[in-house]
Length: 381
Image 1 (cartoon, one colour):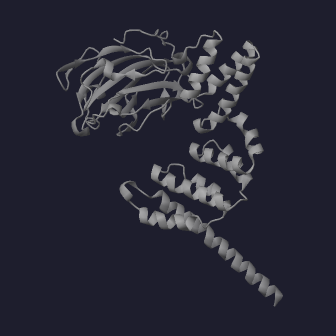
Image 2 (cartoon, one colour; image 1 turned 120 degrees about the vertical axis):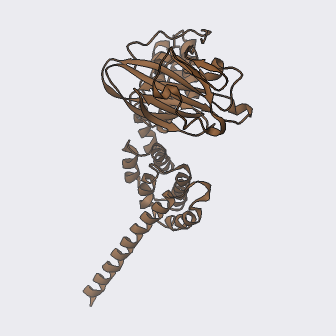
């Protein structure tokens, strides 16, 4: 009788476990299916209520579901993580550390895993920070960079300028956030160090531009204008307000900003332009094109479309978009399409981009034909 009772309890326990796991999986599937304009919100709300009943051991699985999730789905998932973690004080630290160590996981999910570890065991989290200095996740680098900046400031205060410079250079190599980059650059220049930010980050500064073509009612994003068929630098085409042709554009902005408004002043709305450059690679290799752009864009490498995004004024930062590409040895071509929409608010008038070439860690890769960095005040055209 006792053996039958134990066997029955084991069966019940196993059954409960088998029921719980599919419940988490099913809830995650529903949450990831939520779409724009309220599509699937009712089902998502129901799934979220079910998901938060899971215990803390489900946290790594929920975090993993953030990979590839759209912003709405990611918000649901993050809220579930926060709710479960606030309720269950005992978190699966080893599993969270394992998740954090997997650099293939979603960067924001890894950052959230780090914050959970930090909440429960701050000493453990503190020990993890130095190893994040060259992490591919910008979200995780920040703490490590801040620590190196602080070390440099401490050395500077006690007049150890040489070691301070080394720390600031180390921080600059790893920094990706503008506020930290500005802090580091200021400190280095106060120590009489020259800082060539465009070269350091690999921003492409020399372009050819053509436009403006039309983008009335956002039609320009999908329309194939002549530069998409072939880049002919001596060609003349019909544009939105007359004939258009390629012209040189050189930016001296420290963060590689190419301001298209400077090339076409007075025609800033419902327009499309193209920017073109070449990159001579010393060897064939996989690269990352890291783009900052707040307008709709498309990018081609060697005539092949790499990626496009029909979205306007979402905000921008260094490395906002990370696009994978393959360069061949020798001459490679990069073509960017940039669309401007109809909005007239002051914050919608910016029509610009920045692009750099780097490896997966964000370290700059320089072309063999890279010109010297333009000096501040250089004429754009």
